[in-house]
Length: 489
Length: 83
Image (cartoon, rainbow over all chains, first blue to last red; front, side):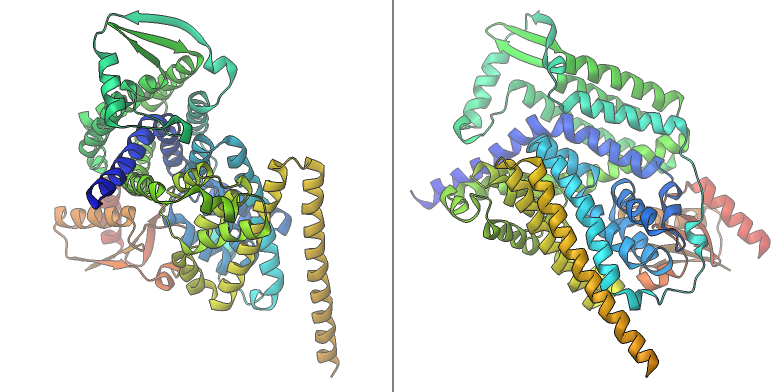
């Protein structure tokens, strides 16, 4: 093959991957997820969680609370770093701050939903549970190792964390309906997949368009690739329209709502509905099948639209739309570039390489997953299509999880910021523990995938944590003894 | 002379707050200085839990959200009265 045909093939791989992603995966899982993230940022008052992070809160509350804060409040880096510095210096201390820092990037709602939609719910749930458990574990360990320095708290008062605010009930219901929309759109329950009504419309030409699209973007089902359907092409078109109308309607939303604001919001609802339809083009006709999924999405969209108009205050609506749009603007372009690049890279990697290194659930395989995650920095969410590529190339799900946990967790950028706030030694100690825990998370999950019983897996986990606690207790006692000796002399 | 500080490391929301603050200052035709504070040590000195923060004459008036121009106008007017 000459250079031209190789580069053509690479370009084709990139474009094909991108088109298939936009058409198939993005809409029903990612679009609601962006809005949920926006609603979390705009509608949850930070005080509902942060009041549990004050200095005088007992540890048994402050650790879970900081994990919850990582999940609920930290969708944007605007919140992560100030909150981290605040908890560390003026609040509950190093341990809960580290827990927060660990949990925040690994299990934000966007990453979880996207992992679930693209790779599988089992991996998303494993990512959630193991990140929570290990986040609290790393926090406790760091607090123990550095407990002397940790005593030198800032002298500022606790008032920063004393604020109390309740979430409005309407805002809470609004968020729950958003979650319902997501569940209806993405979960594979039988009653959602079943078709209840079928309509055949005499629309000509859809089948020729689809055949043309299949030729334009060739794909190989045997390798897990997906083609672009006629429906997919319509959806890509609608996405572009949403982008354009949002630019006009939401970019300047702080100066007041305008017609474009409502056009773009309406378009989002419409797009979700079209994506939830089943479309089967045939010669001279188009069959629409209305599944349980479609009715679920329809109901949620109607309720959301009504609540947006009638129940949320103007401030809430504005903040909600702005924050959601901000996430789209910030993440979507990077995701598009990332998916395109993954499509190209995939043409270059031989499955044999991946299989040889991380094809089974070994210590080495998991460690390689972690190292790759640490040294490669991908923008938010791009780690997911990359993980999917690895999965298709034959990577075991254990090392895959190890990679998925460590990649957003550790990057040069986050290490540097952490070091600036807590100091270099603490930061690198943290990095070491995260690497260890990610490897371990992969091993444990991999063992479960390979058929180890849940009891055995939990036994491993308990054994490991007990060993850790034992070491900590020993260190603690020895230090206490030297302290007593020092005191006596 | 009013001093308005925008606290934030440069994320999208912080830039938006700065824009709004400058707009209000121009509209009210005030003599005011709008300063961006990006260093974390300085930001943390104001006891806020999330950026962007808005500080008028050393008093934190909002944090963690984008205020509307109308709100900022009120705060600025209040600050002018007490000054």
